[in-house]
Length: 267
Image 1 (cartoon, rainbow, N blue to C red):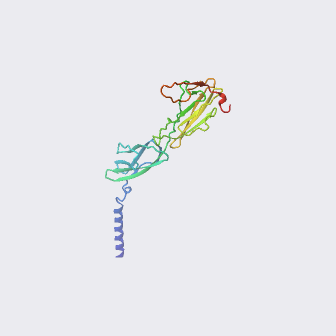
Image 2: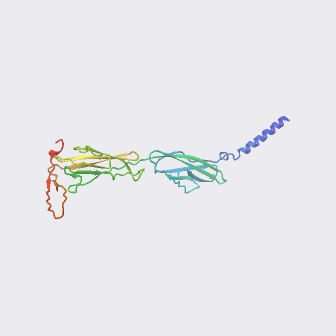
Image 3: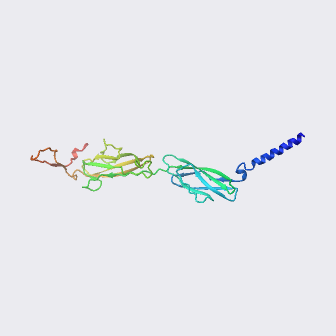
């Protein structure tokens, strides 16, 4: 009698186990899906997705992501192929998780996910130097003892973090020639200097290095020709300002002088 009871219990347990296995998981029904391998791409690149499913003759596919910065192009839901354009990344990589859901004709839905790592690619800024010209002479040519103003505020960056401030830092330097930068402010967008008084014509070279918000730099140079003292035009002096009453006679005394090389420090 005990043996019969034990056999009956075993049969019941086997039946319960069989019932539990049927439909307990999608894998038990022979349906599985693959979203593909993880990928690493650069910002703004086209990312191709190639998902697939097995275990049924037909599936419908749907791709989803919790990242709102991307739009998944999945025009044919009968295939697991899709694509999206990687978003712009600034200073560090981002990780996008995508999930592919494959649903068979009998309603069995299975999912698989992959991760796409998007790396930033920083475009270098472009340093641009603008020289305020002396219209009496050829471009970038100046006499001695006059103002030399150079501007870098037209420098650009193709992928700025802040479009209103594409350049985060400016740095001017004199590369060659008689030094005229002592005491000048060299870390602003504009630099103001005074040309030297010279016995012989000389070319002064200056550089501007700009830094964008992601730390990339670019350097541009410019050559400034300074004429010798004999070719420098005289400087006019109209005299001091005057305050007069109506009807008073005004006597104006003007003068002109030429720069003197002897006045240049160190000469």
